[in-house]
Image (cartoon, rainbow, N blue to C red; front, side, top):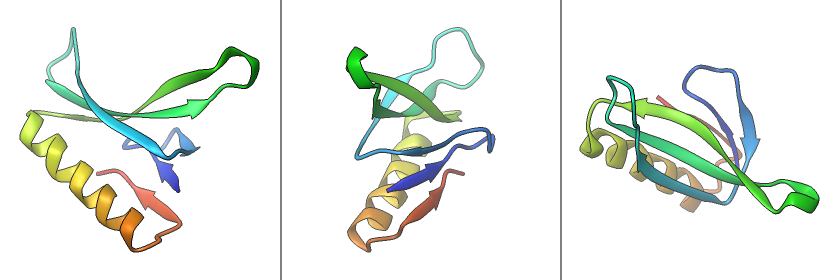
Length: 77
């Protein structure tokens, strides 16, 4: 699935998404995607920042629903 980041600066194809703590910022949680990085294995891409973990969980649920429904492009809010 292709996903456009919250700030619109990243468009990535990934099958692995997770929530992590955002250290050093006002927003407490982040959604990241893990993408292949050729010879070096994989890397993570920041897709969005959220005030709370619950808000991030809601957005991850929207992403899951898009995957289940075979949506080709999802925009992070």
